[in-house]
Image 1 (cartoon, rainbow, N blue to C red):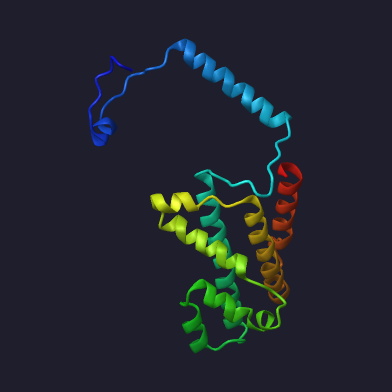
Image 2: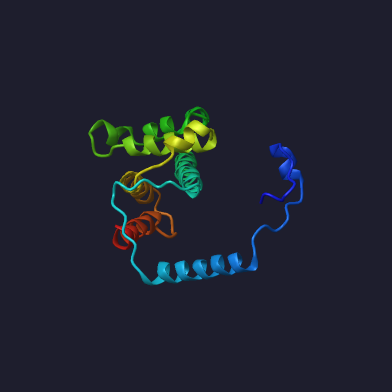
Length: 191
């Protein structure tokens, strides 16, 4: 490393050709370690407590994609209500451009008012998703959800999804069942 002649600036480093700095011996050790870790990952159970914080850049994709998935189901349900004449064109035009939480509150207002469902964890999901969309170094420190937090988000989403499925009666795979199975698998395998 000391004999390398690299530029002093970040952009300069990105624009330069960086020579191979690892010896074949080091590369072999890394390769063997990688192989051994993959073997252990497949054969040894890993347990994480519910309070374990997920500190991985990959969680950003999950939060973003899962939030998008829930928002898409909400939008689809609003369109379903419009197509079945359960809401008029004017109401649909107004609510379909509202923020996602306002759309959720609109769709589930009766269940929310009697405490049949709760959306605090779904609020948390969209808060976390917004932090992924507007990713900053400060958000990187905050975006370390606990396993229990994710499980609660998923479970609350299952309740909403079931309500949508029961209302729509579409002939498709039940997302609520699939998500419930994923939750169960994660709890059995990792907790």
